[in-house]
Amino acid sequence: MFDDLRDLYQEVIFDHNRNPRNFRIIENADRKVEGFNPLCGDRLTLYLQMDGDVIADASFQGSGCAISTASVSLMTEIVKGKTEEEAEELFKKFHEMTTGKDENFNLETIGKLAVLAGVREYPARVKCATLAWHTLDAAIKNEQQAISTE
Ligand code: ZN
Image (cartoon, rainbow, N blue to C red; front, top):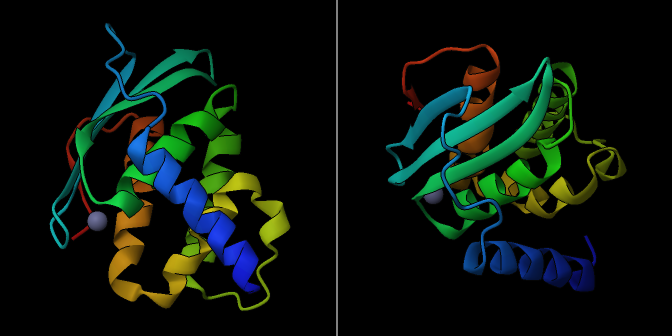
């Protein structure tokens, strides 16, 4: 990866950590699931407002490291207006990207989420980045119990 691209990615992560998007409670949310990453201590509560099978609104509360906060902030931005199926497809791609199993993964297929591609070089941080998505997956499947990455 080019250094200037890496710097740009880091700048986006810093920005979302300093100024998280959709950091609020949705009153009477259709879905509410808690996620916890004991490895790092990241905690979040994800709220979804559904319109049929479309995610009409997404928000979160909680506290965690810069990677987990940036990841959930970006995620709530990106899944808004997506169908459950489209969101699950993004989760699959995000998981492939962060676990680095596909060495030829095409970053262009994942849009802004590509800023988190760097975590695949830091296995301990992968769970920080994927916590939001595992929590979303549970919310889409309408599972009420808290999610733990362990
Ligand atoms: Zn973390």
